[in-house]
Image (cartoon, rainbow, N blue to C red; front, side, top):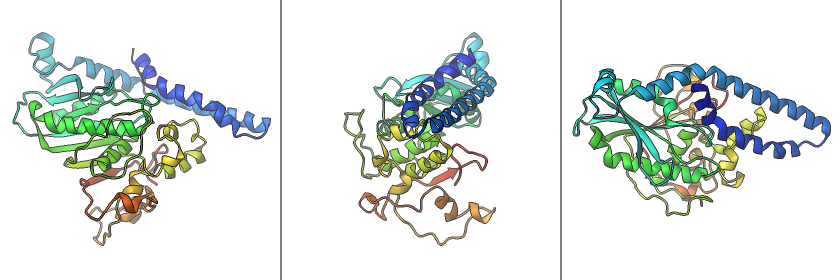
Length: 343
């Protein structure tokens, strides 16, 4: 069961990658080059499938965790026993009209309206084309056991949605949370938005949209942009893509740029700059000493430069000002990560 669900969760990502293979091979000038590229693509597919198989035990644990948690308010039989673990779950709570515009809300058991607990609004990654809420149930459960309400958001995926529509939905999820989390015992003034990988890009870009930064037209979303200037308490980005063009160059060096859905989700290279949070941020001088001890190349402005924040979009001057409204931000990356490396 876990293997099947994991396979379904990645099926769209694989499908979109396969669609791009003819385009990838068209870049090869000779039969020999095409043969060499087919060998490279076969290895990439085998590596991806191997990685998926390795994750089966975690998938099984995640599914069990997601299934066993009782609904908030249940108190009979097995539900009451499970609630003694300290967490209840409200599944597929709708925040907008799209099919995937729902969230799972993990609540410390016993919280009531007015409890003013801290809140984590988590936005998953998955190359803008995959990801399910149940995959993050162990993390969300652990946070709830520590007294943090955790809302795990899903959103429309490529190819049904482009990244522009995705971050607009993330913005709507944030507004719903600010408006309604009090009913679950959360404090709207203590909401942190957390994004992982593609989710970090979507969170950052959603916050820039809320700050009034120039937007780009979506090819899949015909509605007016969501307009709400309220900001969360903080933004935490984990292994995020903040400069799409910078990351595309890295993907190209790995031989995955064409089969990756990133460029297609952004509607092409011409939109890379306006989809890149790092390109749209205002310049800010920082003469303060780094507050975190450690290697000098991982603190201060050096880390930001590695993530691409030293490059500026040609529209940046029109997109932001020194009076920029953006929440306090923490960017995290793994030094061993080769998919979205810290540099």
